[in-house]
Length: 136
Length: 136
DNA sequence: ACGTGTCATGAGAACCATTCTCAGTTGAAC
DNA sequence: GTTCAACTGAGAATGGTTCTCATGACACGT
Image (cartoon, rainbow over all chains, first blue to last red; front, side, top):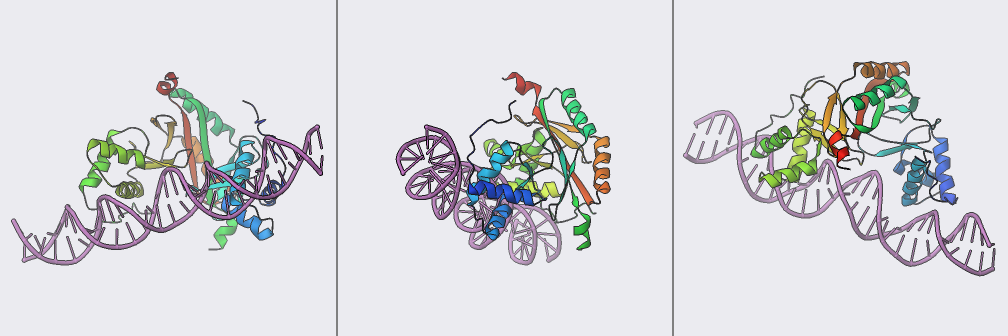
């Protein structure tokens, strides 16, 4: 139930760099994209380190993770740390943070009705944003 | 908008076997599990064929696919072909089919509000079923 | 019952995102 | 400075899934 006191987390150039790209983008991005982005900026960071850092950030609730339709993991630093969902553009990754108290309640109740415990829910919305749609 | 008239789909021993195991189980199963199940029955089918068949069935709407938390794809022949969601036991795969008209409406409306098109939603519930919970 | 054309199969290679290994590097505390 | 655990990165390993391509077998017409 704790908030991951976990590892001491030493600050390094690499971690700062990853945190920075995450701070600069508003879209959900894959580890590979972030790795490439870092490389193109000159802040080259090993791919393994990118993965490790993202995982650590995700564990600490610093970034949100979701799975693209092809199974790739996408990461994003969200504005709010509280539980929420996303409306993501499937072509550019642009994201709108959503919350739906009604849906939360519904999910929990459905689980309970059927005698299931430890209910978790995955609720993500995918669509094509206005900008991408115009690009035909 | 069609229902995949698609390929002629020739009936073979392998396809019949895959369809049969799917008909016999009520839980979401991975391609690998189904492959093993077929092997243990004596109806051995190549792994590639299992994947191909499942994909074809999924394209035709015959089976539902969802992704486990680790990214693996899980398949199940659902009772209803209409759009619905699932409450799945994360330890045994036992599944309850769910529908939530409220949630559907909510999803569509949220998308529209933010100017997104072609809205799709992923809504899955995971939990531990009563039987698995008792097994400590 | 037989060809025949075409689609299906399967063993293994290829793919690819992700994780692991491990020797070398580097924060940061003393 | 020294010291040492934590961190890094290149490359190997993993594992689910897809691809390749030579071989096999439906199904239709004869």
